[in-house]
Amino acid sequence: MTRAPQNLLAVRRLLLNHLNVDPDTVRDQDLEPAEVGIVGDPAHRGGYHCGSDRVVPGDYSVVESPRDSSGLTLDAAALDVGLFRVDVGGRAHDLRSFSTWCVAQCTAGTPDSRDLREVIYSPDGKVVRRWDRLRKRTSGASSHLWHTHFSFFRDSIKANRDQTPLFRRYLTTIGLLEDDMSAEAESKINSIYAGMFLGGSSMGRSVDPDAGGPAAASNSLVAKLDYAMQRLDALTVQLNALSDKDFTDEQAIVTGVLAALTPEKIAAAIPATIAEQVADELARRLAA
Image (cartoon, rainbow, N blue to C red; front, side, top):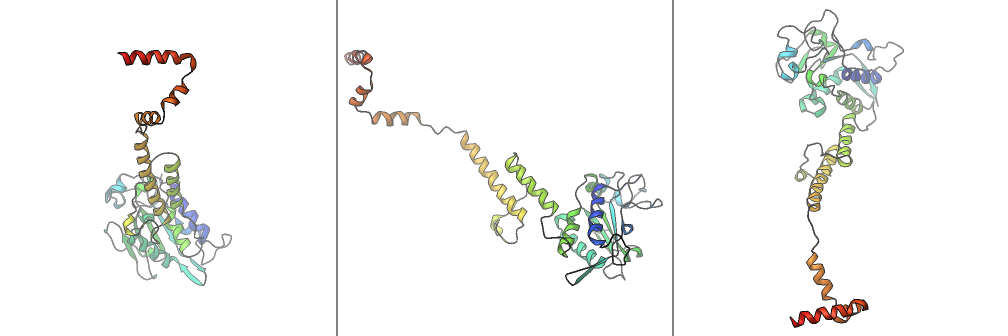
């Protein structure tokens, strides 16, 4: 039967932990557990709320993208978020502003939104809009006037890729979370650490030093560390190349030593027991 995957359950917990202000009471402004859904009800057939046991022939959540067809499992690949309102620092934030913020991130192509296939939402509680990465549809059912639907490409669910960074960043942006390092950034920095100290290369992304350099204010911490890792990679290659070379010039060393030796020093260095043998050998060579 269709199941709720761990990476979407983690998003659900994150949102409820911070948008359900008082879990012990039901308040109109709180995001309640019943308002954050992943698996469709038993009658639900087709779409991202369904796993492989409930999809239908020609299901759009399977056939329109190879990312979906290759990632189809029993896991659902959607998340619904209901109405809420929180006040932070004198500013109100609700489902409408949350939804439009998420769509803006998708439109901008931020790394933490690239697994989202679509967002069905209402910017004002009056009209329903649909952001579709594949540009297949622009609207949705009227139920999305009071809840926002997120569809994730199924291959990202199958891979159990962390989907919390986008939502964590939203909570940080509005001030409900401290502006600390995201889970995604922490994971990337751990990769850099492993590359530096445990062997292996950097993470394969490039930072153009001619476009502001690694210290440019526009570059993220991860980008700067990526750049540093690339430089370390290059230095490692150079050091390995040097380690294969023999920089010892034995002839130059011998020539230098001999140049500093006078006949007196040579004679003084020869033990008395073999001086006569050396003299005889030298005489023999001179006579030859």
